[in-house]
Amino acid sequence: MIEFKNVSASYDGELAVLADVSFTVNDGDFVAFVGTNGAGKSTTMRLANGLLKPTSGEVLIDGVPTTSLKTSELARRIGFLFQNPDRQICCNTVREELMFGFAALGEEGPEAEARVDAMIERFGFDADAEPYLLNRGTRQLLALASIIVLAPPTIILDEPTTGLDFRECVKVMDVVRELNENGTTVIMVCHDMEVVGDFARRVIAMTAGRVVADGPTFEVLRDGRVLKEAHILPPQVTEVSLILGREAACPAAVACANTVAQMVTAVAQAKQMEYAAVAEAAALVDDVAAALTAEAAVARDAIVEAEAALGDAGADEEGGR
Ligand SMILES: Nc1ncnc2c1ncn2[C@@H]1O[C@H](COP(=O)(O)OP(=O)(O)OP(=O)(O)O)[C@@H](O)[C@H]1O
Image 1 (cartoon, rainbow, N blue to C red):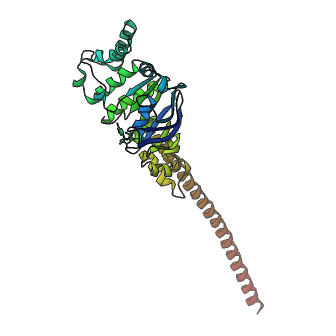
Image 2 (tube, rainbow, N blue to C red):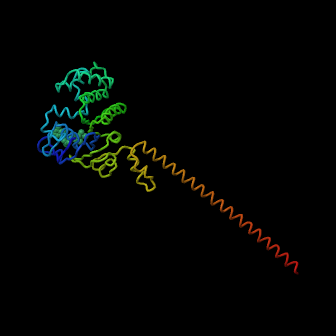
Image 3 (tube, rainbow, N blue to C red):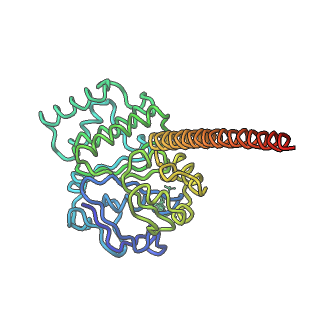
């Protein structure tokens, strides 16, 4: 569990880049920090993993202030993935890179070797490859693997998908999702709201060093005030549903769809309801037509009868003369 209690922070000791920030990330959470450039997201991440200490307030990891935790203890509790893997990768081979964390903690040995082997197998890495010759996506996966091989209970990802193509982005985020499903707490900074909508269960929005919203992902991403204050656009499907939802006749399921699947189901249901309404109207028209036909037949019979009566009356009159 990570707790921020009224945290303020500054790089130069004067200008506060974070002001009175409070939140709690519980074990197993998947939280995304969103907001404009300079909002203080990366600073918050540096405070969360103890790289930066607060100027006031407290950052607690499992109840212990980061100021009291040694670097090695922080490294065991939190894995940190930089936005640019090249800031992280420093070894000559993939295997050395994956062993680096164990070496830094003085935990090399058969257990570490086995975990590195498992990671190489899981990601399909070439153990002897030179990291800098790998493509951007694979370097990002290597940087991620070199963190998760240490099995930290929490990982912090600073813009994990920046610079990746769609396929690479999905590969990295699928690994992250699986980790979270298996209990790892995930905290990520992300500018891509499609990724946020697809993966995070909670969003914390920041502006100018302050938290302006903290809640379930789509509650935050559908809040007009937050979107404006944090200068963010929601995922495209959410945006479409927000726009359609402004129409009075918009079905409720369309107005609150957040994913392509939800939107497809909502539109299909609306179409079915429309077809059912048209069929109902057609049946009503048939009933009215049948009733009118019956009434017309009755009227026609009455006219025939009346004409016959008139004819009979005329004949009687002539006969009487
Ligand atoms: N190392 C640093 N030294 C001094 N000021 C810094 C440093 N890092 C960030 N800042 C300043 O702190 C403020 C918050 O920056 P931060 O990087 O935390 O924002 P951010 O929300 O992560 O932005 P981005 O999305 O661009 O990464 C900004 O005004 C920034 O200029």
